[in-house]
Length: 265
Ligand code: ATR
Image: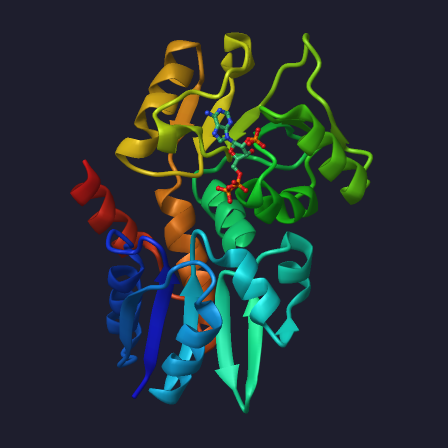
C-alpha cells in the first residue's frame, strides 16, 4: 500500500490529506494519506508504528518539526539550514528528513507574481516558522531582510548565528516591499505590536491561512498595504514539494488552489 500521513498535535483540521489525495488523482497515483494525532515527545514511537504498517513517508507539522529534525538519520541541506523537518521519507531503515516550507513560500510568492529579487523585506517573528523560511528567501535574491521579534534578544541571537550581511534590525524610517508575518500572534487573537507605518504600500503575507490570518491581514490593509495574501498557497506548494520528494513528480496546484479557496471563502 502507498501509505502516507501527516503527524501533528492537534491535527483534526489539517488539509494535507485532501491536498495529497487530489494530487494523487491528478497524476493517477493511488495512495492513502492519513492524519495522525501525535502528542509532543512521542514522534519516534509513532513513526516506528507507522513504518511497521508500511508507511513510506510522512509530513510533520506543529509542534513536531524539531522532533522530526532530531529523529531523522539523514537530512537534506535545506532541512539542516531550516533547523526543522516537515517531510520524512522511510527507506531501507533510514529516515530522511527534508523541509519544503520555505520552498513552498517562495513558489507561492512567484505564483502571485510578488518579486523577491532586490526586494526589501520585513520578517515578523524569530521562532520555528520564521527560521524555516529564511534560507529560501535569502536565496531568492532579496536586497535585505529586517527581522522584528516581540523578544528582540531572540532575533538578535538568531541573526548573529546566521551571519548574513543582508539581515538587520528594523530601523524607524525603513520602508518595505514585502512584510511576512511568521509570528504565532494570530493564534492568540493578537496583532504583532509593530508600527502601523510598516504596512504602507507593501505586499503583506501571513503564513497562517483562512480566518486565523484574517485579522492581521485586515489590519495591514487598513494601514495601506498594497496587497494581502494568506498562507494557503504556501501550504499547497509545500505539499506539492513533499509529493515530489516521495513520488518524483510535481503536481500542478491550480485545481487544489481553487477548490480550497472556495471552501475557505
Ligand atoms: P513557531 O514554530 O510557530 O514559529 P515558536 O517557535 O514558539 O513557534 O515562535 C513563535 C513566534 O511568534 C515567536 O517569534 C514569538 O515571539 P517571542 O520570541 O517573543 O515569543 C511570536 N509570538 C507569539 N505570540 C506573539 C504575540 N502575541 N505578538 C507578537 N509575537 C508573538
